[in-house]
Amino acid sequence: AKQGDGNQTAFYDARAATIAREYIQLHTALLQALNKNEFSLFYQPQTNAQGQVIGAEALIRWINPEKGLISPLHFIPAAERSGLILAIGEWVLQTACMTLRSWQETTATRGLSLSVNVSTRQFYQEDFIDRVTKALQLSGANPRLLKLELTESLLADDLNRVVDTMKALTNLNVRLSLDDFGTGYSSLQYLQRLPLHQIKVDQSFIKDMLNSHSKNEAIVRTVLSLGEAFGFEVMAEGVETLDQLKFLQQLGYRQFQGYYFCRPIPKDQFLDYCKQYNYN
Ligand code: C2E
Ligand code: CA
Ligand code: CA
Ligand code: CA
Image (cartoon, rainbow, N blue to C red; front, side):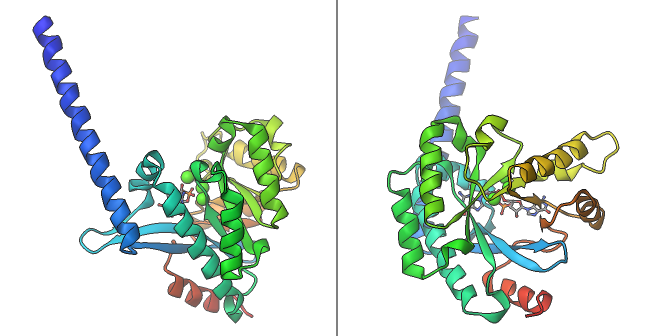
């Protein structure tokens, strides 16, 4: 037994060392990617009940010369652990604000809102408000068209501080959205205290909503009436099929995002998409 324990310890040590090495490699690679400008923002259209584009969500991509396009699912969690998410998040915020400004100056995109994902660590920075203020000033973007997407993990910590920061953000006229709603620390108690503009019902609930054994239909229904009772806009994300869209519309949903409409696409393609689908 002793021998076995020793082997096992050695095995775990080796595994921990491998994980640590991979982690440092990824950190170094991400830092280089940032310096070499290998990150890019894609934009996924958001539509209203009439199928018109009302805005977009900015979603980061890492386009590496050797490895090609890398999904945020493969590097955002590591960036969050290493703290590099602060530098990446800053780049995202500034780039998104510049895009928003350019949309304001183009007929096909004028008035569209842009949703930007903000990680919890980013939100908790002492000078987060200053950073948002600066990104808006430098770009000249209209704050009312900028939506910051926050997740419920934010609320696990210090609710008073979170509410203060959120209020300071809304004083800048920025809109706030609670992303992935229903997957985290949802509590009706805190919802009442948050100066939110929108909640996004998590795509996992949309996914098997039409499956006859699923309870997700009830969740999707309930989240809408809950959100409306609080005066929030409610967006359904992860809409993949016409059946899902029809059903959500029947329930009373009026904001949609998902592959059924369009995948996240580069800025140029997004402009073409708007020219094609908006009549203005
Ligand atoms: P999220 O914020 O929940 O973003 C929605 C994700 O769902 C995106 O994945 C989007 O491409 C995907 N999606 C959209 N419509 C559909 C659909 O109909 N079906 C399915 N199956 N998926 C759909 P993506 O772009 O891979 O991003 C994954 C996650 O990475 C995001 O989830 C967000 O948590 C994070 N992320 C992406 N960009 C950023 C960023 O700039 N900053 C931060 N902090 N996180 C980001
Ligand atoms: Ca999001
Ligand atoms: Ca989401
Ligand atoms: Ca998510």
